[in-house]
Image (cartoon, rainbow, N blue to C red; front, top):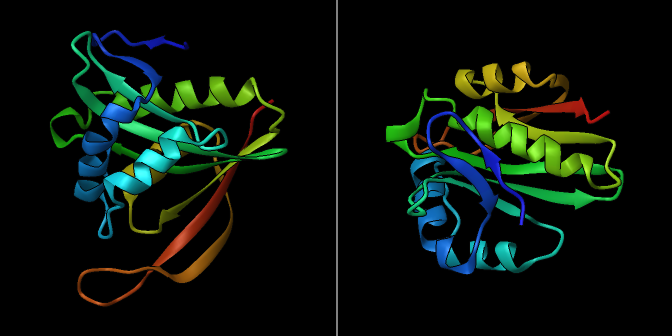
Length: 158
């Protein structure tokens, strides 16, 4: 089992099946179209979609992140942090853990998609060396019906 520690009493470890309800709740809080507990259960059980949680010693989950292994690439599928833990370094803790985990795979770079208006996420990804490699206009649905552009980003793992 992998563990990554942070100075704020949280650590990162692989998600368990029992975590899927909390993960689904965090995802729904952070995204217009949240995924179901059943979808997350399938991801947690899948060998190519590792899910990691940032939690305390009592396993209270502050955030999660999920990868998809695609041979020489790994995709950051989703990352979300509980509202009460935002701006406390949890996203960066999860990103450090993801990079370390991805470097133990055959992958050479990490890809992700992020809404063009998600300034907090863009700032976080920039700190980890992600650069824009493309965009998808109208990719993300919004509650008001106007679609948002997705920025496609990549970072070398080397």
